[in-house]
Structure formats: structure tokens, C-alpha cells
Image (cartoon, rainbow, N blue to C red; front, side, top):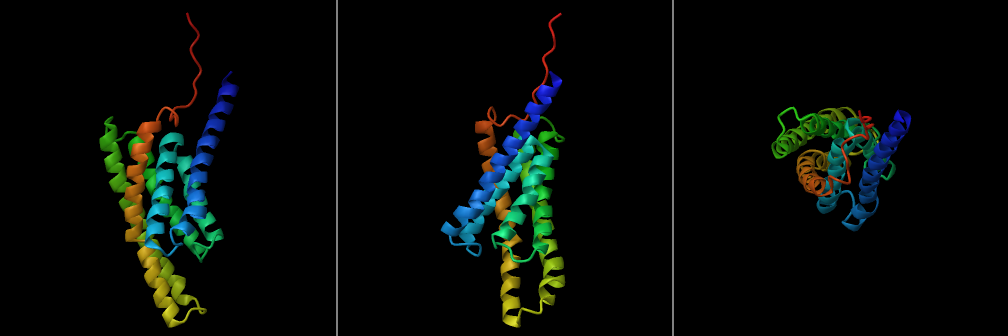
Length: 209
């Protein structure tokens, strides 16, 4: 009996994670080109918010590993699609994504700040968004631009300046906005679909008597 329940729990975990990953990937694949492509502020806000929504919802419905899986897969897929150019960016974005997943998992799922869901969510949204912003800001501006971009011999001065400005905008303040927007969106959807996206594992029932 317990083996069957473990299988059902794994299937539930895989299904919920795959659904949210699919939403994130589809937004990158289809919504971003419609809204103007990777460099367009509108597409960045819309797609970035959807990706953060998926990260937060995965952490709450299926746990940290589910959110972490999406956190790693989405920047890798973005690289394959040409949304990001350098493979080094995958690691930095994955770490930023994992930061917000971890914060929501610890604060909301573990309820370390108490049992009041709205308070936990508000705290997680602020702390998680700021944490992701700090990781991406430091990783992109202090590490990637300084150690990778400025040492790319294929870039001339004009190209370097243009890419530096674009990366700084895309991976700093824009990320703070999309993280907060995605957190708010996840809050509304989670409350509406909580019976569907169960955050509890299937358990064995005690025998009567």
C-alpha cells in the first residue's frame, strides 16, 4: 500500500512540476516574440512575471526541488532559444531563480513567520524578490560583465557598451519588478486553485480500531 502511495506522490510531483515548467517555457517560446522579443521591456515584464509565477507556485505546491528544477531549466532553455547569448549567464540566472524559490519555500511552506498566510506571503514576496535582485545584480554586473563580457575579443567598444547597458537593465531593476509581479500573480492563482494544486502528499489512512 505504501509503495503505491509513494508512486502516486512521485507522479503528482512530476505532473505539477512539468505543468508549471511547460507554462514558463511556452511563455518564452510564444509570448516573448509576440510582445517584441527579448530586448523589449513589455515582453520582459510579461514573460519574466510568468516565469517567476511558475517558480513561486512550484515551490509552494510541490516543494523546493520542484521550484529548483524549473529555476535551472528555464535559463538553460532561454540560452538554447538565443534569449541569452553566453552560457555563463545560465548559472547566474539559475542561482537568482533558486533564491526566490528557497525564500518562498522556507517562509510560506514551512511557515517560519507564523500561520498567517497573507503575512508570510508578503514577507516572502519582498525578501524573495530582493534576494533574486541582489544575486542577479551582483552576478551580472560584478562578475559576468567584468570577467566575461569585457574579455570577449569579438566585441568592439560600441557593442560592449550596448550589451553592458542591455544586460544591466534586463538583469537588475527589471528582475525586481517581474519577481514582485510574479509573486502577486502566484498569490492570486494559488488561493483560487489551492484544491487543485495540492501541497500535501497522499497519506495512508489509519485502520479503524
